Image (cartoon, rainbow, N blue to C red; front, side, top):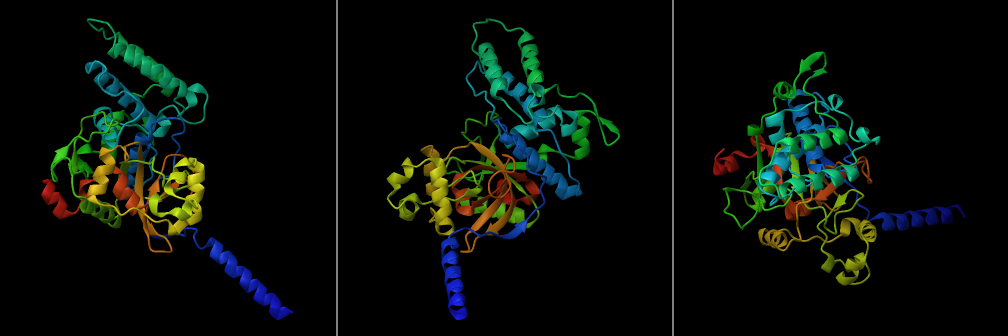
Amino acid sequence: MKKKAIVLIMSLACVLSSLAGDEIVFTTVLENPITPVKNQNRSGTCWSYATIGYIEAELLRKTGKVYDLSEMFVASKDYVDCAEYHVRMHGNSRFSEGGSADDVFEVIDRHGICPEEAMARPGSMIGDTLANFTEFFATLEPYVESIAKGNSTKLTTQWKVGLQGILDAYLGPCPEKFTFEGKQYTPQSFAKMLGINKKDYVSITCFTHHPFYEQFVIEAPYKWRPRPSWNVTLDEMMAIIDEALKNGYTVCWGGDVSEDGFTRTGLGIAADIEHADDLTGSDAARWLKLTKAEQAESLKKLGAKTPELVPSQELRQERFDNWQSTYDHVMLIYGIAHDQNGREYYMVKNSWGKTGEYAGIWYMSKAYIALNTTYIFLNKEAVQKDVRKKLGF
């Protein structure tokens, strides 16, 4: 009887093991220090949260000190810059909540930065505990559009007063002076004390519709500032990320998270739906009819056995040209991991709070990053010397 019980237990263990065999188990290869996960909540400010998180990681790398910098200070100043540009363009540009890593460094260079404690807490001006732009941008956007596309033959400067009034009402006034650790600063002197210099950083991309090893402005709607990125090959871009991480640097990443293989639970896989019938028990057409939640559940069931698209320069360009891969999110790459089948992933800090299965961290496969990266933003010193030589910096 005892022998039968042992056999039964062993059999049950084998069954459970086979059922759980597809579930992805991650093993960390390397992990660089980062500051805590934050929550952008109901605001289109991933660009600010991710890039501030990147700067905080840079300061942590260089000084060993944890700083908590204000994303809303950056957003407020950037919306002023964006509104002025939009008006100068007579409305023929994009004014929205979105932005890019370039915006954050440009704001800090022009306006400085302040710690989180020196600015009104996100959402506090409207009685919320987190950023909430629902009413804010429903007010701000049409105001700016009315100026940019109005019938005035000559503008006064009062529209800027009105703009600032809306920003201050919802985000709180940006401080002109503040005290930090017993010392008084202006935003500009604080940025100088931190040693943040935009000239130390570079944006890199990877497309064939422009020459390699030259700069161009990426044709992405949310990149409203005409700041150029350096163009390298796909292999070089991926090697830049890997080498940066191995040498203790983090990488700010801008790209597409609207793909079927990107879940809200913490996973990003370049799922090859046409060759993954097991995902749905049917063909790719059925997959497309599933809700995002159902797709995520199917991916979870298939797990580490999910077949992936094979990245190539040609496929990457095709997906960008046909709008399949767009620019809609910014995050922070800080580590490398692999699953039980040896597939490699980047460990990525998101700004959606401690959500998902990994408390706000996403595991995004290297194939997903290769196919869906719009740009990476990082310290020049993190780029390999041979690539720097090709680019001339």
